[in-house]
Picture (cartoon, helix red, strand yellow):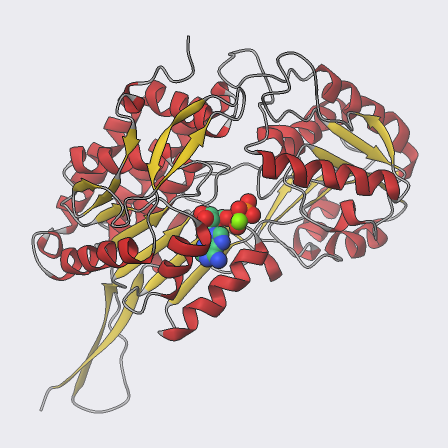
Length: 492
Ligand code: ADP
Ligand code: MG
């Protein structure tokens, strides 16, 4: 089957979704989308820029203030979100295949994710009915006070390419639950499922202008959205470098921000752990999605007494992982998303070599027939790594694991926390006291004990330190989209 054989790809150019209409960029410019497994073109996308972002923000403002959307009751918003979840569930195959064609992830993974994503939508459907304020009792006589939760307004969202449908659903869910409106800017390397999901919102009965999707480049469309003076809130998921630019760009109107900026997450294996379970889990924690996961467990701290044995076990799992075209049902790892990402990851492999690391497996881009047109890097396990080496400090976003032996709980806690990031952390032990001690001491938004990277619609996820601020999933995610108004009524 040709990679371009997909119902959403029948029209040659994918347009922008603004105010419920499919439109070209005002400039008429387009850019290409390619399959990272084969290099085959998938089509052209409208290249939106500042003028298109502005059009979309105007539409989102109008939809926020004028009917019908602001008149939707919570129960009506709930109904729309539930319908959206059902539609997504029914089209699981179409969405999974398009995600895989566009960004390369294994079809089993993109398909599996949709189970979580429909759960996320249904969670937010429930939350639409759970918005409420309070009636604090002031000490001022003859006064009634109510706090009222109101939607924050026009939201912007800028998302990455590692899970395009995933990120779209996470940005859209709370917007619909709270009655906000949205301008979504997908990543230039993976814009197709966000566009198809925008279309699904319309089919589900979301009124025109509530969800707008503007494709284009970060430096133009993205920057314009971050700086736009009529956007009330911006949610960004991506690199910390771009996150810092977004913070600066947001200053014009001091828009509310939430940021999820990746990490360099520690994954700690104590000698008393169930190593037969921990070894494959440690491999999946870092090699899943070819390492293109914000919370990837990239620093594997292993207690010294088992370091050699455990490293061998992880390398053995890694060597058995199947790499190839994401459309193949049997593969575990697809290609990296782009030439740029390949260059970035192989640059880190070169730096590991130059700084004296050893390779237990992997280490080179795959070349030869069938590989050269794609961006394939096999699972790579590095030993002889020092905490200060570039590969042990910086986010690589590729299938690269650094093994770091340790001697004591106290030492590993300090070393695990010695990073500017704080998104996730994992530990494996059978010692319940230690699980609690580290659960408290590790400075990260999620700490996983005897598991890794678990997610649930009801459980908040987000960063400490330079991994960002704000939380997604759970009730906190909703609060990010709500204002609190204190209404004072003098009763005499
Ligand atoms: P990468 O380096 O892999 O492109 P980024 O964090 O830069 O990762 O990209 C994540 C998202 O941020 C993408 O949608 C991208 O278009 C967008 N982006 C990139 N640069 C900027 C910018 N200066 N302002 C706003 N958005 C940007
Ligand atoms: Mg970028």
